[in-house]
Image 1 (cartoon, one colour):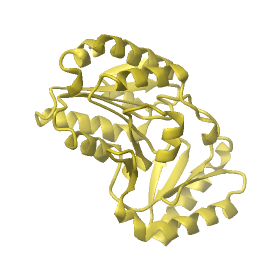
Image 2: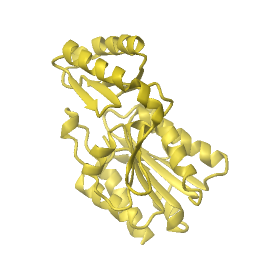
Image 3: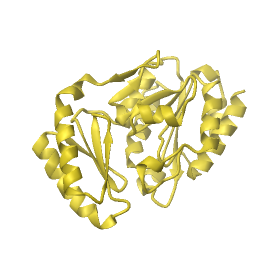
Image 4: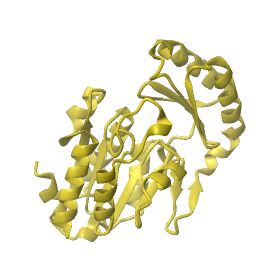
Length: 260
């Protein structure tokens, strides 16, 4: 598939370019706080945002983090897998359904700190907490079991991600529902792409496929960002694969030049 030709064929105002952050626009890192957007990816995304009708980053990260990493005019931010958004005026909005669970998230975060002092416990604002074991792979099984138990005790949901488990409110959102909401809010869009590198991005891939099958989109392109940790399912379901964040940056740069 000639991705750029497919996406550039038509009115740029009817194009949506959507992407994950970690592992797609930034390199995979050991500590979450060390992640930074690749300068080439940031610049290319900014160039696309000046031309396309909808450009958004859909991530498990909080919106505040995404804004700091990608201060791009016209970029929409979807954080925490769809629990928080920026609206048309740039204000951060939250899913009201999460409110009853905020105290439980705080309690389980405190428990995680005490139970796993050597793991990285990432508090994602008030909405979620993620337990990372990349630096201590021997903790993986223990963290997984503990997360399942803690979620059951506190009425939370467990979200599996790469070498980590996230506990969050049991609100039915993921990157697929986020893509649905973005496209539903922009009915003029007739072609779209999504770039991602992990299991969580499969829901976004499926959303694009569903919108195309329903006739909502003329073209829907799923971009896998390859790495040593990319799940085989993601690569199998992708229309196009690029080599790491640098490969995605190069593709976005080419797309921006084609749109201009």
